[in-house]
Image 1 (cartoon, chains in turn purple, yellow):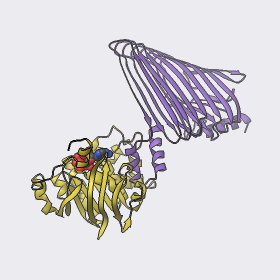
Image 2 (spheres, protein in one colour; image 1 turned 180 degrees about the vertical axis):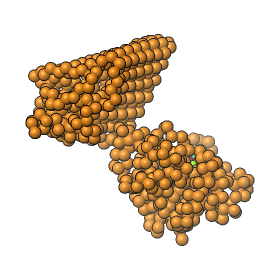
Image 3 (spheres, protein in one colour; image 1 turned 60 degrees about the vertical axis):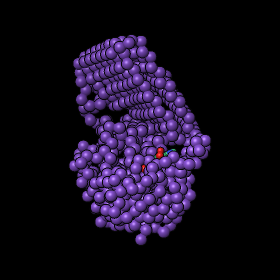
Image 4 (cartoon, chains in turn brown, red; image 1 turned 90 degrees about the vertical axis):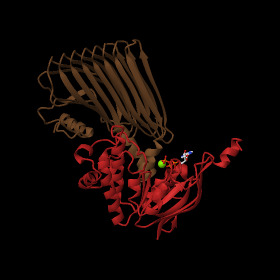
Length: 312
Length: 249
Ligand SMILES: Nc1ncnc2c1ncn2[C@@H]1O[C@H](COP(=O)(O)OP(=O)(O)OP(=O)(O)O)[C@@H](O)[C@H]1O
Ligand SMILES: [Mg+2]
């Protein structure tokens, strides 16, 4: 096996995916180790151009107008060494009326001191749908610093859904900064689920601007901080067009010496727009805890199950 | 033989005696009812038996299977065979129905979980993978809770208002379950306001103002119930201690 295909295989296994991503001819994929493409498969209507950089890679992804991809496209960004920097400059252009769903894995199983930076510019054309699920799989040493940054434009009647999940391995430091602009009748959903332990630090800053008439947006975050982990969440929706509808929903569970703060900001500049928010921070709900314990679970088991549910 | 016994329990919450030197005894293999007006302290009695943290500061003794369990935590009591079906069951975001039912036994077979759902009148095909969250109605969560208890088959089961939110059709199923559990020698305590539920019991306690004021065969207690507690002259009067504090006396 060449070193490239070995890397491809190792990355595939580190993601924990069940689908046969590397062999299924109907699944498009792009696997990147540090600054190199180790394997890829494209499908008609999906165009990818990459350019190697010193400590990372530039990736441009475009779809042709009106193409629909049946199966999820798999991306994988990873690094096996204990130390290093990986910077991904991602440009995504989803053309008019096309539809694509991407599952991206970011895996740093051996990290002691790894910095992963993602700078994304995403444009979702009129009537197009883009769903992007980013799952992080980290090692247990907590030596990863992750800086995902994205600027997204959701054109008329387009749909943008994104989920960020970091439940496996230690977080280390994560600093998310997403900003989305929504045009007329577009839909945006951003969802983050992160499980912090040890001395992890979690920062989430998600902003949605509902600029188009009848645009809709929801920001959801679910975070657990245990040990002495810290989380700060600033979620903001602005609405400046008639019939724009937005909602910010943030739940954080704090255990042990964890510390959490949440600042939901809603700003409405049109009398016909409507934005709501809810935030709940605290220990696990005592009724939930009592219920599970009255079935015989210990307090720790009950807390675990409640947090798992919240983050699922 | 008493399976569970409370002896002279007094519990103060917010400076008020909610349980007032209460003594009660539940027999093995029997279905008991506890009836009484709103605020009498029925749910408080249930929480005190289960051992919830806010209800641990009582005086008196709780004896289960001849052992004093005063100092045991909820889960320790549960592992000894006590469980509680809540008046208003909790919601759990993201916890699936199947995991909720199998919570005490992760290896529970899918078949068994589905059978439990069927028994409480929830179609396994539509509920199995749903979450026990706010998308389930109160009645559905009530049924689910019973399904969980049925799967567990504990020796001592308190059901706090088992019929609340339950439609008439499903009520008979719940009564079947109560009969089934009794046939297996389990002890059941039905906290209720409903005549139909009361009639499922072999024996009943009348509770008022944090104490048991009468007990007997269910049919002996029914007249009190029908007459809205008359001739019991008790009202849920404010506690004298509280009045003193507020300078009312
Ligand atoms: N944590 C608490 N702190 C202070 N007072 C409490 C607390 N819990 C219950 N009480 C009071 O104790 C009394 C008994 O309440 P409990 O819920 O046990 O009544 P109940 O008999 O179950 O009534 P219902 O039939 O309405 O369910 C009520 O007056 C209630 O307000
Ligand atoms: Mg009650």
